[in-house]
Image (cartoon, rainbow, N blue to C red):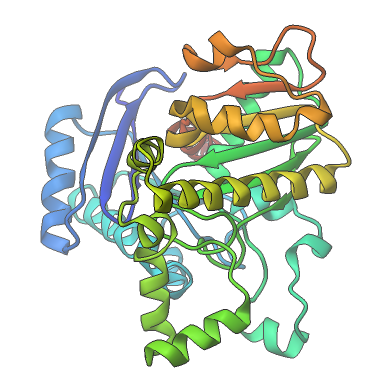
Length: 367
């Protein structure tokens, strides 16, 4: 049987996976994304030459806005609605929509499904979703906290249940990559998360500042003499670790910090404090902690970030087993035997979450 093709286009990367129905990986790739319709079609064509004609295509979409609270099959009205969501996450939505359009031109008869990072957070209670502004301001622009990285968090929750033989009620998932967020998961559902209306909010990230006082945003726009949209682009690309140190690579920041560079030490301190503060807030929302999960590129590969974060929560019973943390193998429990809080390292597989959503939509469509 032909595979299902999962396409995950970021602001500058084009990741894809050809998956069997059980999640077995036939082939995959990760290359630089070229942002033009012609280049997008050429890149998708090269993938199709390698994997053949898929039976379906699933797309990771960052933002579902107020309309899409679950996966959806792409048709003309859906595509038109997706276009209206572009301003909510322009850096991410534009390339993802270009990929949808390229697939539509090349394979018009193959069904496409969009799976959204915001879907997992649709369970957040109203008190976690609303901002403290008048409804007359918020409702016309659908202003609320949506949350992101939901496809990664959903996979982490499923793997947590599999690894532990059941899902404990209070789980905090740290998705740490170039973009980063923390999600409080209660009984398998999102109770709160660090990102908000856009993916700019929350943790200090590779090139994004994370949480900023609204007054600071206004002051920056005045100081730089630029429009809100121009400031948004600079907040996306020029802040975070990059703005503090000149590099967005945490590995380089740590190497420079270990070499005695004061600016790099301070930047790592800012990054870590932001993470600890946000994990602590999630623990407060949940009323305790049963499992702390690390996923995403940094979460998977930085033993130091895991160690330093866990040390801050030793008072809760978080205790890493040193050798497990330094050399983890795949999805693993890194906590000391008998520790009351489990600490998991889970390899991010957003493609498997997209696969699940594709099967759900097409299966119901066949029924």
